[in-house]
Image (cartoon, rainbow, N blue to C red; front, side, top):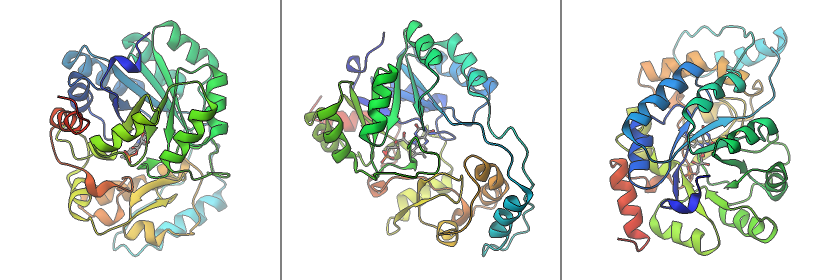
Length: 343
Ligand SMILES: Cc1cc2nc3c(=O)[nH]c(=O)nc-3n(C[C@H](O)[C@H](O)[C@H](O)COP(=O)(O)O)c2cc1C
């Protein structure tokens, strides 16, 4: 089985909608681990992305998926309330919101078919535990399997389930919060460093720390406290090879006076984004559960991208986004390694 310790201890975080074959290959070719975020991709797309990446690198890569229970269609009443909320946003646009019908996301079993064929060296899951037969099949094919935890209880469940490592995600992290609970209930809201300390004392699995890690000094701090590696998302958002929209990059690089906020407004699950008109307008507003709200807001997000309106795009980023650098991925890895005291 491929191991974390055979690489530069940096995993470029899986970021669904942002990770391209070029980014993943550039990171892996530089000696770290490049990841695909395949949460919203269908099997055909996963197959073509993996084929493309394999043409660009023969090094270790990671594929990542969301795990969550299938959702039923919302009642007409709930759907109408959620649509009314979106209709009252202070946005001068005539967007038609469709009522929703299942399925709202591709089936995990179907998404994994190309995985069994391409056999990425690492396979990770966010929001919960994959079925045991999937985990065991991946391990029997030589893959190293990791699952996100935001607290000790989740990490213990991951260890008992038989995974190979835990991704310890702290509150500083950009994008979706990986709590097992779908509505985020009971979230202990731990910072990355505090979570590492708790897991170090109580778990045996290797721990990969995620959330707010932006430079070589941060990486060394986490490794010295016992992390096996770090997982960095926001740092890679402005890499040349990332699929981040130009406007999203502009907010990360130029709107540095803004704060980040957790919002359920875009997808129905808590996720950290740079604050904009949408996140402020959606505070305390009714939303459908994940992933229904994600499907519902799709036309709005598409409209925002098409019209270049960053105030209505999901600008996922972690609390430390002000430290992100616009560089080719290999150059970013090389700078991080040199900041760590390596050559
Ligand atoms: C744009 C973006 C998209 C993300 N998408 C995913 C995803 O698809 N799967 C996942 O496990 N984590 C996802 N994350 C969370 C990362 O895995 C990781 O926890 C986070 O980026 C670490 O914090 P940082 O952003 O401060 O580096 C995403 C993060 C960002 C910034």
